[in-house]
Amino acid sequence: MSFAELGLSPLILRAVEELGYREPTPIQRQAIPVVLAGGDILAAAQTGTGKTAAFTLPVLTRLMGYANSSASPAMHPVRVLVLTPTRELADQVADSVRQYSQHSQLRYAVLFGGVSIDPQKEQLRRGIEIVVATPGRLLDHVEQKTIQLNRVEILVMDEADRMLDMGFLPDIRRILTLLPKTRQTLLFSATFSPEIKKLAAEFMKEPQLIEVARQNATNAKIEQTIYAVDSHRKRALLVRLLQQRDMSQVIVFCRTKQGADQLTRELKRENISVAAIHGDKAQQARIETLAAFKAGEVRVLVATDVAARGLDISDLPFVINFELPKAPEDYVHRIGRTGRAGSSGVAISLMAEDEQKALANIEKLTRQTLKPEMMTGFWPSWMEHPKPPPSTFHQAFVTPARPSPLAHLMSGKAWRHPLSQAQREIPALLMPPRYNKH
Ligand code: AMP
Image (cartoon, rainbow, N blue to C red):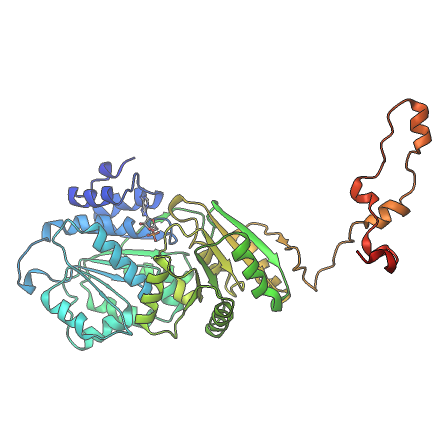
């Protein structure tokens, strides 16, 4: 099936073509016709499946009739509201809207906190059809009366489960009361928790259920490796992996902001090009760090779960879990940064003794067995070491039952020493000291 068969506007199709998308992804094939027909959808799809285009392309097509070049703000009321849990995701969704709508006259804005509100006010004053926002900053604008939501026709809740995890439910409820009752609602969530189902039952009209991959299933194209290691040796193992696998762009996940900062300092000391991204960083710094990473100026991006949720960095070949996440769902989200939209990827996790329970939870959730491996030189102290192979000395002098030269002679075959050259050389350490001089 091609994009053209889905019924999208020609101007939107042109943008899609220019981006080099050849065919719609499964979520796009399923969601686009329903959204174009005006239906509500409840979609279980993770980042990396093409979900942003799955809602943005049909939403833009539905708005095309409103596109106009009038300078009057009244001609550009807010008709679409996209809510996202994090600033980064808002930024990325807005970037997709920018790309897909580039040949139309539709206007969009992105609203999130941590940056000055004034430029956002100025944009809203001129009139905007599509607003992408985090709930908190959107409500700041509502309070300051710089935004009107009573003409909204389509509401999109992206990563709704994360918004609930982050405690945005009261804000979402408040925003929902400000929107017209007759509207289209599209809810995207990585998982369908009972809370999500409740929200959907309350605010949606017979939503069509769309599930593209098994719930919590990890992407089959991602190669997953778990290394068992002592926690104090994780950094050295990480450095070894960076070198050995020649990783030029990798996200390394830590559980805490403090852990992320410490690892970043330590890697810097090893002269590795590294930057951290987490909730304590100023918004501007986060945007700049992400841009530098995307541009290939920063090799290692150390991130926490909240900061990394929804980051769209295409073709990221490697993801490393420096620590396994406490919540197994986060493992799925983390490794979803690699192997995106059909490309393959590698996810490596470093597991210390006290993280074995976390691994068991991940295995249960993703319904797979992840057998820990050991890296040479990093054998964990909490795992029994297998018996070392017999030494050369042992093989040369202790192993009995070798065919004698005489027996060979009698058999008529050419005699070859049964030991290899290496085995015949007596290890230097076994020589008396006087032979050891040269
Ligand atoms: P998302 O799941 O929305 O975060 O999208 C993941 C990545 O896939 C983004 O970088 C998109 O640009 C890309 N993408 C989305 N749809 C397609 C498609 N049909 N073909 C190729 N790439 C796509």
